[in-house]
Image 1 (tube, rainbow, N blue to C red):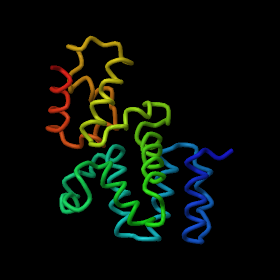
Image 2: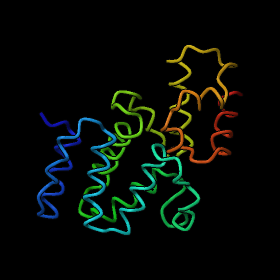
Image 3: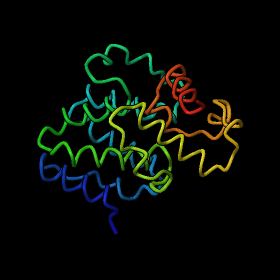
Image 4: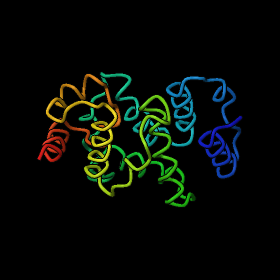
Length: 184
């Protein structure tokens, strides 16, 4: 059976671009691989735009991709990687309603970057800013990890490899600021 995200993207691409969905997409059992195949398909639509998305999303998987490679896009595309991804998909699919697009990108990020869709609750993404979303995510981590508050340091968070933290607070300084806000 198709998951919501798979059905959504299949209908989107076939409906708006009238192209066949890549045949090998649904044969990929790992979310990471499905996402990479899907992004490779998007490159056929707009190579320059989608190449940025492709490299940006893979920053957690392929460490040599550095965020500073995209500095020139920051003023145009927003303050957080999440905002930039949403903006770039709006460029690629201008016909999509903003609400549907935002909902789908949230769901897709959970699956691709966290490894499974249920890794974090949706309420972690209710905040309007990257800082709000990161704080919600950290609060969820503090509850679910059952670690004492004074034991949750940046080193601990990084050792747990929470990839979405780097989407919501892509710089170490930003993550430090959020962590300090939680510690007050």
